[in-house]
Image (cartoon, rainbow, N blue to C red; front, side):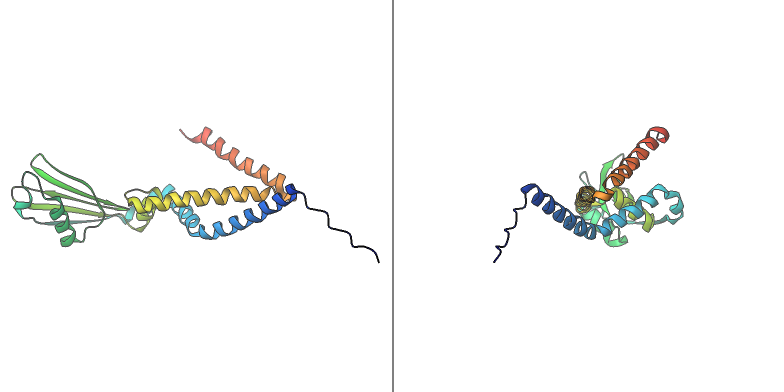
Length: 206
């Protein structure tokens, strides 16, 4: 009976190439799914940021007045108590961006995405005026895109999103090298896209 021929061993380079293609495809697919919402969010808010004037009519300003116990407004004002009262009485949001006592006045500024509130307190009388500004949902999303007044937690989200999008781009580029029929045209298109961006920057950006 004829002896079955033994299979020739697969060269290490071939094995490595196959494994790299498999891992790259897996990473690209699942990273793309994980970062889908991130890509959509930053794509849409990139457009709204570039055309902020379309949504300029959404600003809403509200004014309040009230009193604060004078004992909280001594030489060293009680920041914790004052901030807590303003929040409780008027539903103020955002983080405290500035608290200062100078020039015979105590001022407190709150900042958040698409949001600001400023209180001006008379330390002798204990009276205050407060202006709250809400810039609408689009402004909130735009500030989240920029990471403006959004806190440490959202800063981490932006960092993680940047890493995810970088990996998606790199694994997509790596996969292109395994699609032999499309590799050359794909690389040409990628280079052309980069060149167009560079030329627009050099020609039109002041």
